[in-house]
Image 1 (tube, one colour):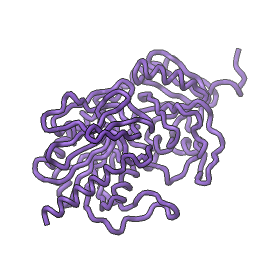
Image 2: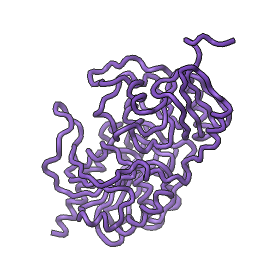
Image 3: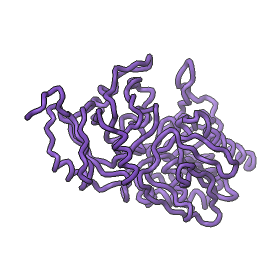
Length: 389
């Protein structure tokens, strides 16, 4: 018997193991295939969907009230959504925020991103935790017509993120300057007019708020593509080098990114600071290794311990790969650890202003627990300037 059109599912999520989840579609129509992960953040769904680190992933939100504040251009972390799709428990309600410019469903549709609501996200999250991040196919058809066998086959044929260099897909096409600082009441994003440090930021998939934090810390930022060479970096005569976040397998991106980082460390005394994929790139350049995690860390409530100070920070995370702490060579110190599973969340090079963290200090989950890292970077550049004056 055919179900009434009003109750017939209009979206379907098929996992590679054959599990099928039906729901109601919103956003764009069509089909997408990606790795499925879950995010535990209660706010920031727009920032999550536009975070380049989510390339190649469909995001399951464990918090049910997704869409309640609508969307607005100020909250985009890049020009368009990068995450392949969205899975939520409840269909988005009408936005209730003075900042809202466009409802979530319209925003997704205008940007070609598929979403499914009405899914048992608790069950789905348990499956991801127990079995690891699965490959999945997500389809939205207003008429509710789905070829289940084809969807499962599409999920099974997805190549996965291991070995995938996705930074090349999300990096900037050419270099550009950035001077916009963090949002502040009542003027919003003000320009940096008194920068003291010239920073080259290598874009493996950089979030805008990271660049804003650098500008707020007194940096004149020049952003270079992921493929930048040592000569490209040094042509700007920087006071420091920043390595950004990004998606995909660090070993794949490292094939061309690591040689540049090695040269910067070997040939200069510049401070180097990395976040997320930039952290993993630095670890590879210093002789360490990386590993694929079972289901990764995705959320805004991850406790991280600074091993050297004993301080615990509430952090935002988004990564499916991690630095293997056991692989770190002599002279490279582990500085931060996840209190959820003990995985590595920070390293530094002994005797040099070279360090990185896995978490996202710009995402303000604490909300200010980790901003000191940008200030530390600025202080290292100021100290170097005094020593070379």
